[in-house]
Amino acid sequence: MATRALPPGLPAKVASVPPNQTLYVTNLPSNKIQKEDLRTALYMLFSTYGAVLDVVALKTMKMRGQAHIVYKDIQTATQAMRSLNGFEFFGRELKISYAKSKSNIIAKLDGTFKPPAASTAAQVEVTDLQQSIFNAPLPGASANVTSRGLPPKPSASDHAMPDAAAETRGTKRPREEEKKEEESDSDAEMELEDDSDDE
Image (cartoon, rainbow, N blue to C red; front, side):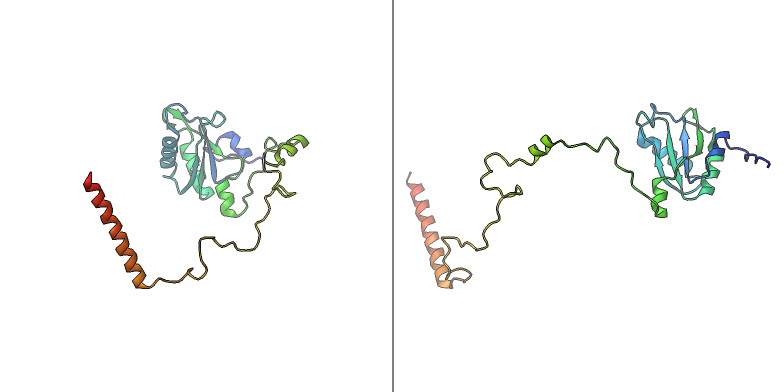
């Protein structure tokens, strides 16, 4: 069986990774440029070869100097990789290869996206002592608390306000009463004004 030769322009380690819509770019400057400026510059550079769906460039210690460029199709990703591999970008030569796995944005478009499972560090064992502390009643509220730790439900009867008479609720006053109240209010204001003048 004959071995297949690599196409020209591809690095030797690319042979183990199948072609992908996502490119893995390394040897990026990490100290000289802000993250958003780096993403914009990468987008401008790589979008000359086709539609770029996403640029992931992180500044964490683990991902420093690396980026992932996501293209719409494999052909444009391959063309960009062949053209830009070794390209001088902010004083450093880019090293470009296919990403090992499918990008999340491509998986979402394909309908094959599965959110990452919770890490084992996030799963904490709760002891009986902790459980008893969390389920304890609030201080001073132990008398009015049901067995489930909730306050009792209010009674179903509707309580009327003591100062609201049933016959006057929801009825409109006749105009004569309104006029009398307005006159008495204005008389009280006049008396107050007269009192203030005397001083």
